[in-house]
Amino acid sequence: MKGLIDPDLLFPADEGTRRLARDFYAEVRGLPIVSPHGHTEPRWYALDEPFPDPAQLLIVPDHYVFRMLFSQGVKLEELGVPTLDGSPVETNGRAIWRLFCERYHLFRGTPTRLWFDYTLSNLFGIDELPSAENADRLYDDIAACLDKPDYRPRALYERFNIEVISTTDGALDDLRWHAKIRESGWKGRVVPAYRPDSVVDPDFAGFSANLDRLGEITGADTGTWKGYLDAHRARRAYFKQFGATSTDHGHATADTANLSEAAAMALFDKVRAGKADADDSRLFRAQMLTEMAKMSVDDGLVLQIHPGSFRNHSPSMLAKFGRDKGFDIPTRTDYVTAMKPLLDAVGLEPELTVILFTLDETSYARELAPLAGVYPALRLGPAWWFHDSPEGMRRFREMTTETAGFYNTVGFNDDTRAFPSIPARHDIARRVDCAFLARLVAEHRLREDEACELAGDLACGLAKKAYRL
Image: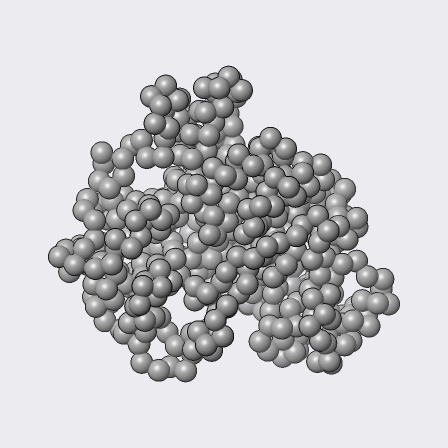
């Protein structure tokens, strides 16, 4: 056993099948990481400054960590999570780290535990589980590492063997950090993804002002439907200048619509005037998914749809801490009916790629796999968010492969804000896929040479192809 990670982690218990999994894994463990969708900060790579203390790097920004601790009675203020009104929170990184270490047992059996064990062992050379007794010593060890040049963002990017990583950037972002990366001459490939939620969702805070700003930076008249669409086209083109290959949409549902020009104009006028009710807002979001798909046919950007999250479930926590603070909860999601207007319009376009994600696992075999198994434009994103776990990944393969196959999926993406966890997440995905392939070979459903080829495709080949990287 190396550190906290056993060499046979997540491989089958049966020795024969385990041997196959080991062989496949040996072929892919050293392949580069392709990270086509995530939430790391482009500023990190642009400035290449040392990361802050261990707590600010590993605890404070990671909602997987602080939501578990909050569920067990630890206040977010105690964990240093900033408040919207600037009211005091803990700023002593050592105190935050101690709270975490004292409660490390809470993460037993979770993917967070696997990611953290991997990070501690492989990145910082720590071979013991965090605890109240060793918290200060581990903090000092990690802090000493973070002071070294080879723990800065660009050095870690190279150490992690990342070939390309995509950030997620709002439609109004000026992409100055991406520009600075380009100007620096550094060879690392960091590309943006166009996330227009703030200017397509009438319920988004500041929506009207956001449309005004969209008009200002594009020179388009966002007071009209035509000008509004032109503004999106301009921003998409701007993002493409910095290497963007995808757009991303975090809608509450997968609803799409394909209104007539006159109906769409009337709906936009109502939304723009601030007179839209809840049904109007839902319809507008639905229409905009189809509009974005049509634009993707023209400009080649891959469309990602991440529906099914009841975001900011607690209004009091939203008011105090803002968005993305662990209170996003999965909901039931329809795809067959919801996606039909978009698919009727562009689903047969061979040059279009729409990647569907879900937080509703019941839709895998019933809806998503059959849809992706026939529509040329559709691909299935990997097990996402709450299901980004060994069990979730296994269920995804078991429930989608027999109908959609492997090649209507897009491999793996880590979808993380926690930069140090990226190699852990990719390694776990590779282990789970190799174990699944080994089972198929052991059951004589797949040849070994086919499984070995598939292991490479699932590790990075399918992601590069689907995301056009």
